Length: 331
Image 1: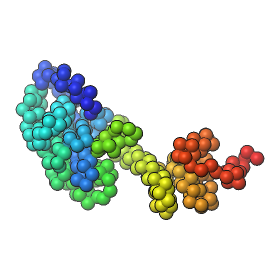
Image 2: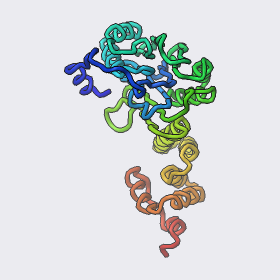
Image 3: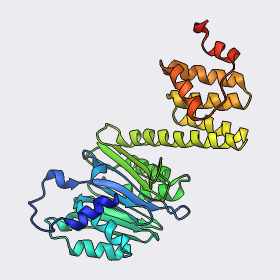
Image 4: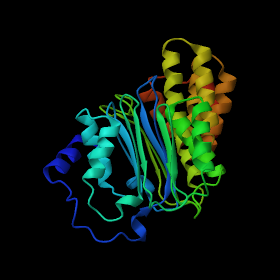
């Protein structure tokens, strides 16, 4: 949440009464997991639901502040309110008490909310009127929760998988969603999923703390699509890593990272072109030619892509003999 949005929220606070009765669209029945990575300080939330665009209402977070999932008979205002209170230094438990005490909207007893503060403290609530099956499971630095689920096996599977999975926080969160779905998931079916991970300075480009923000708003298999999108992001990170290794003359590490990118995003000309350029700089022109030919087959505008990529990555130009092999039709 950008600071100007919070400033607007504070200047024009959402009234805590004056709401009509909740309708079917207010019931964000879903399963989610919120977590903190103690090694990096990253905070994240992953969510899936039989609900359109669940990422627009459930996950809220700010780097070095906290992460929130607000769902069930959802009060979307919980998200912004909780983040602001966490920024003021309140603990997760104190924040939960305050936002619930201020909640005068209908169906309060049917809500579900989970909060993790920057220290990893967890506060979670499943209201007694939340639609069956509803519940949560807390662990160290995480909480898995859901409602209108097939049963408690969903949150149990999410918790167990999150605890045993290795990798980045984003990968562990999506693995937990996959396990929850495999265990039964939302008893009504599937529609949307989302992933939010925040970490100070870890976002793309300049001045960005959002490490990952992915939304699948309407899909037959939203978690599978979320995994595909995450793999694209991981591939982009692997390509960047490969170039960093190459600048440090770490050739084998650069090639391994570039190869990993093609495995994560196999149908992209970007990853195969990157592998080709890394292999070329490493002196393996045969491997470079194979990779670049694959990229060329994938992109009808490959020649322009090649020139632009060589320019912005500051790669050395390809020699004439190599170019003739890559573009024999130009002879």
